[in-house]
Length: 319
Image 1 (cartoon, helix red, strand yellow):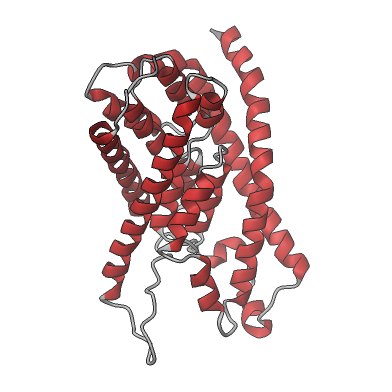
Image 2 (image 1 turned 180 degrees about the horizontal axis):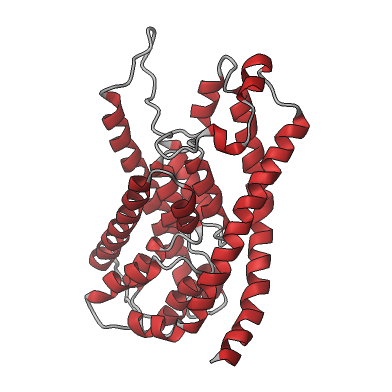
């Protein structure tokens, strides 16, 4: 057993390092933008800029489109934007729903599963956008009761701040904001770099730990997914919650082997949000938001699996 763990660690640690390294540039750019937005937060018109950056209707579509990219680093980026109070819950949920992590490369590499990739991407993109927009609409209606209406026109309620981190946790000098209204560029870069390295370290450790467990239990995961009939989408949705690339690979491989139906594969890959949910659990101060997101993700995964089961015009299994 110890030898097996050692061998798996030899694969998991370099893989986790590469995975984290490929994610860091995008994360750094996001944090630079966040720092600049925070710097502009005391200037006229910055609120409009922040709201334009996270539109409650267009935001979920953009998040779903970017989430399709087979790299779960974007789920971490989206999680960071949500924790910073920049994007609303619906946009984050869209990113989680559309994320397929390593499943797409696995399916693209096999001629038998290749024809199923386009329908999978289309379903996840459309479903992620629709669910995200509906969640944001619900949040808008909830917030609208207490939102102050502008004298000239109605403005969109702020639905982005429920999980936001207190600015004091970022080691910012609030006096420098109020007195000068701007950061020196070097300070912006250093703050962004510090936050990038902190999140990157968390991602590396979590990714390595979860993938170690995932590799050790991959056969058990595949076995549970191959349970017959009606229960497949339900089981796949629960298995998909395991935040690991091994999970998405197990779902793809079980589908390729003809043991998992296409609706169940859609459910499993819909509930799998990459490593983002783990970062959310650690960084989000509002645990109610965390629970709400997880519940919404499970419900959306089950729902889309049922919808595909009812209306998919072709066979469910790879022949």
